[in-house]
Image (cartoon, rainbow, N blue to C red; front, side, top):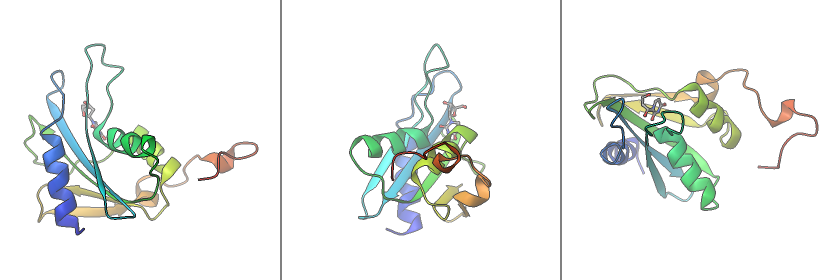
Length: 141
Ligand code: THU
């Protein structure tokens, strides 16, 4: 799966965003080690707080299906689904990525299939807090 195809999947996922409050639609496409793609969109709520970002929707879908071998994620977003800027994962999503992904996990953020930038997770969340910072560590990944 090349980056263009992953970005295309993120654009398709963005169409399914449920964002009646912010009207900011986001789509994410998560590439697994076996080549499968798990997509996610943001899902808002009238109480605002329960809103979930597109990236976490994709990651939680995958983890809940027993998959944790994540290679890269493509993210697109914009008002009413019109993508004009690169859409970066929020801090909470970066922290969730740090839980399941290696420091070299790639985050692709795109304006189109031809116009995108790629960052390593370690660049977007340096010096992260993780299981190693807790007494006894966390569950083995
Ligand atoms: N949003 C995402 O889906 N991903 C991010 O990384 C940033 C924000 C969503 C949440 C909310 O539905 C809307 O964008 C505005 O914050």
